[in-house]
Image 1: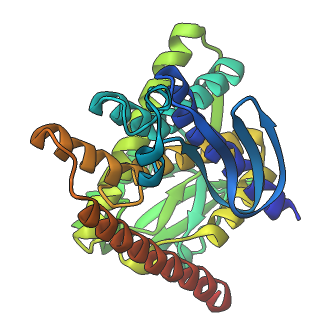
Image 2: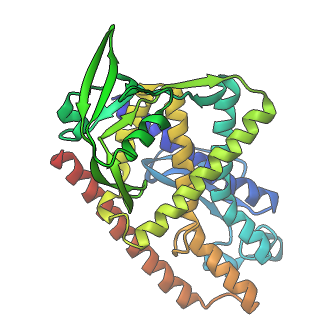
Length: 359
């Protein structure tokens, strides 16, 4: 139940923020908004306020803002006064900004989330430690009897005051057996560990070299240092930019086939992660929501018809040609985009299901 609620709350907020961007900029340029929907499919509840119908629909996997003038039939029958409220009769740059506002609002929402977290709880301070957070099975450390939560006091008599000391001693060992003095609870234990050559990989799984390793990972002991408005805003900008860079780089690595498509996840995986993050605490949940908001913003900027990025591509072509693309060409591109997204959705659902039954 926690997984379902977390998923609906997380995705619902992000979809609302995205559609709110389109809605507010449409209103800014005096475009008549006919419908603001959270979700697709059959409507559950709706209420008309002014000229806009606000509705909640059954499928919470998206949303849309329907504007007057998007449909060619509406343009043909529109009077001069109605054309002033028509999306199609706005300038190219106005339509461009209306479409762009959705993804931009998602990126700004991430910035706002991180700013709020840093202002309330402070800046994350990952203090250095030699405490072990993870031991790989069948690794030299695992075979030697090293355990999670052991604290490395020294190696071959050399004090290890920080994690870099551990890394450097192991790296420079040339494979020689090392004597590890570790604190386990209230007891100090000596363990003999023989490093082995292992492949070093980056976050995308690419091999970037080899060095002597023993198969341990530092424990994550995170603390927070209070900060003010300026510090919180600066950290929020850095955090958002880091997520944007990683998301863009992730798409590049996917195209390069460095990241296998089998790693892609869909709604089921998002729901599972959202549930786990909610259980871990509201800070983890907000950070996950911020990451997902960046992903949603960047994904919608991809030049795929149906997505905002596809509309922006058409508008850019229109600005260069000084006339819109032919209606038949646009319809064909939209059909291709729908087909592509349909196949992609089926594929990520398959990955999610395979992950469940394969685990």
